[in-house]
Length: 199
Ligand code: SF4
Ligand code: SF4
Image 1 (cartoon, rainbow, N blue to C red):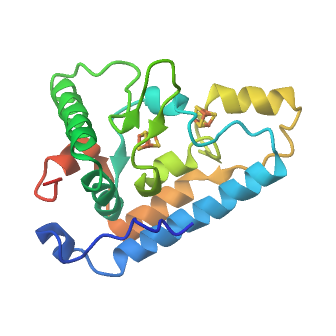
Image 2: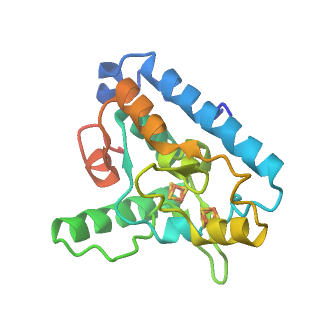
């Protein structure tokens, strides 16, 4: 998927000028590859539980989200495009995470500050078209060492007796491709309040 609104304006920010112009398109191409693979999985297994609006994983992150420089460029555009109240709420949530992280007081399950939740709703991602790679792969990609996957996905696979039919994406290869293209991943809290943060 080409994230149609996700292409940052390279003239907008001092930080954007220091990023080579081809880097963001390369990261968007990685996003498209992920989208192709996840679509193939859900087409092959109509019961696959991941879908837009299922915010379970977004409420139970193991840590502050991490992303590379170009991923941040894309995400920053998504945050900047939010309505002022939503943007303020997101930035307040990121600031709270930064404070908790600095005190070593992060809860075991971190709720993503970009998850919008209403009363009785599962929630939805405010920046869906601009979300980082980790959000796109979770539930579909596995690590060779420790396949930390969503219980809903594992339960669905087990209940359809599909353990041998599922072809997981290679999480490490996505991470390496992102690092090669866009440098090391850093926490969202550092990007958001660094020199290339949200204005
Ligand atoms: S990984 Fe789990 S919680 Fe997240 S979208 Fe998929 S089924 Fe829902
Ligand atoms: S950015 Fe969106 S998809 Fe990713 S964890 Fe946050 S709410 Fe979920």
